[in-house]
Image (tube, rainbow, N blue to C red; front, top):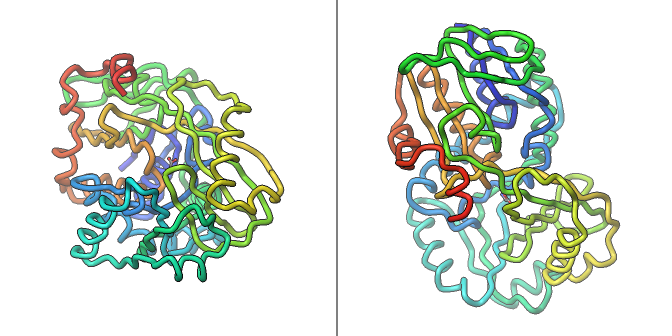
Length: 363
Ligand code: GLY
């Protein structure tokens, strides 16, 4: 099959990767393949630390289970290094979260995932850099941490090796007839094919009738902090990579305002120093901006027609959800198998269609 993928964030690239591996001819059409939030994402694989539940938890767990294999394949085909750890995330709790997270941890454990509720003594001994303001934390042992930028680089490289064409073009119209895409028109060319996959990221409402809108995140990069494991708290998350540490992230409903702001840097630095005081003495490297693709209920959208799939609105969890999102597409294209997630995460749950402005105000 000739498959056109519109969009080049982690979901678009992962879908292209799996389809190309299965022998399909794949083209990616993108305005700018370095524009997506994936390039600056924290890369935490953290469904438990995020406190997810219900269908969103099931989807995330399905993806977490695919992650080892996904990273292994991308590494193997790209021959690139990808920083990837699965040794857990320390979820630092503030007082009003304790009871909720104790219950959640028990639920997760009953599903077969491991956790450890740390005593104050263990916390002080094993995490000596953590501020003494915090004395409760859970180690979610199955969670992970991937360098999203390295993963994106490796995917681009792997796609080149697999013969995937990445075409720089801006979509101006999606021509649809009933439940079929006739073609996608760009400024430079018109794209025909057997199948289309729309992975539009935060730009989801531009040509598709879905309520997706950007939530800006600013994220700091620092150096000189010696921690091994992600420290995730409600006020800040500190994410060690191979040669630097990320501190995330602001959450701003300001459309596509790409400015790095003093207020953003100040809030992130203050919160991070409150969590780990020695961050004050670290080297400040840079601050980056990304736009999370949000929906009104903060859950993704999976829609399908006769010859297309929409995979959108991954919001805070695009990196985590990439493997399951590509499996969902692969199952349709290869086996005609429709995942139950199309029913659960259909855009029909938003009965007013693409009321992005309304969704934004209610957010
Ligand atoms: N996944 C964390 C964030 O979006 O800030």
